Image (cartoon, rainbow, N blue to C red; front, top):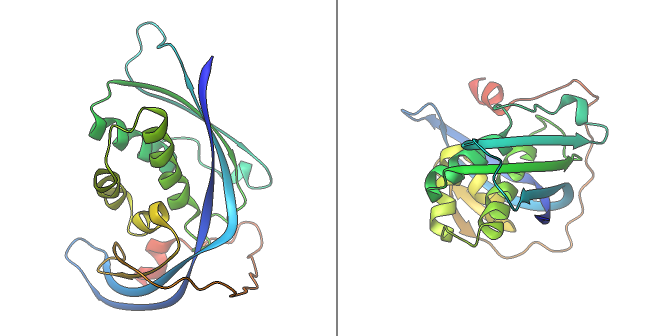
Length: 198
């Protein structure tokens, strides 16, 4: 038998975004209002009960399904992998064998934090499945290492983001807002790094 956990990872919108000067670490200082929306990726995490003989470190298999499956990276470039790797480092875990079934609905490189929300879901799921070895502040520290909007994806809701976007202040819920999302055609990507570079 294996341990399993199903997690829905929400997309986010920036209701407001002001980009300021570039920081020494290459990121930009921003002011933004993050909002979680009800567009989700569905992730199913599986941890086997027993460690295979002779294996150490991270053994991760990502199994994407759905229309976006063919465009989903399955290697160390996927933030799921990076989140799992940093989690086991922080938690002092020497081996992790993990399978993630990923039903992807959030557009890839569409500015809606699909990768970041998947990584946040991974941090949450591993912490739960492994008996909560990390406190929330530890999880937020790992999230900050992985990306600027990842701390928000871990907490969700509606928040003011300052600094790199990782300094967060909870805002009143904006219930009742409706959004019409016009999604780009397949193959059109807006990677955050390229957008900020402009």
